[in-house]
Image (cartoon, rainbow, N blue to C red):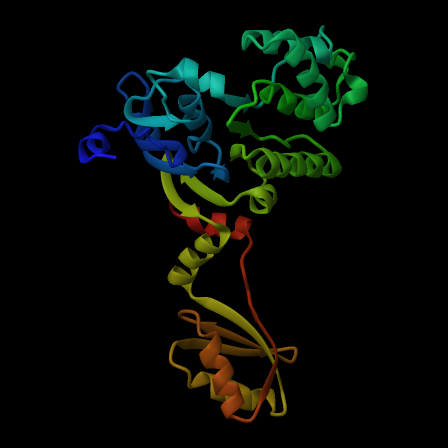
Length: 328
């Protein structure tokens, strides 16, 4: 290929992110004093399950409404599936699925009739449409309810049916708002498994807003924490732990053999960065400014001891969330 052809060749743009916002903001009120979303910069990678969490009034729903074209930003910009959230809203709606809270259906219609209605909005061919309806209801475990009116569905059935509805157009990006709220633990786990399977088998990017920290921790690859409209932190659970470690230090639990625990404590006390020690129930509790696992183990061995148990007290997402939003 000549140099001229190489220079003139059109290279298609490949978007790395399924969702991206740049200084996205939304203000309300007569004098624009209520900053519901304030300079939000987000990047959601294609094919990941992304958690979006925060206290009530943090700006989660407002953000989601801007991303799917229901609200226009006051400032900033954003893209979903490569489309601009202001100029290309129709394209976004064609390529995304949304499970809102609460989800709304035509309760006087059956599950099949509801899905048929929504499929027609996307101009899905009749033969493809009818088979897809059957497949989706099987996927969400509602095969037996295909010709049952949705008005008679339980909360768990409505949630699963809402997921089927959100998938009718085979979206590349799926927005889920409180997908398991009001469901019993068994039903909630079924929904989580469905979401994980969709992500793995179909490569669907999932943007999940939930108050259930256990849910977010279980199924999300990365998590963004927002409060008062501002992004406070983003990353994997381990990334969030690193944020708190840098701020508050690390707590270790040790059990030691071959020497008295008091001798082990004296040895560990000499390690630079260890700030507190306490013996409780045959366990040595150590607080350090940073990760010192190797250094602490070496100090015990040098004193003649053998470390039989060495664990870090790791905070779950709920505790991390509370720590990060303190004072926000």
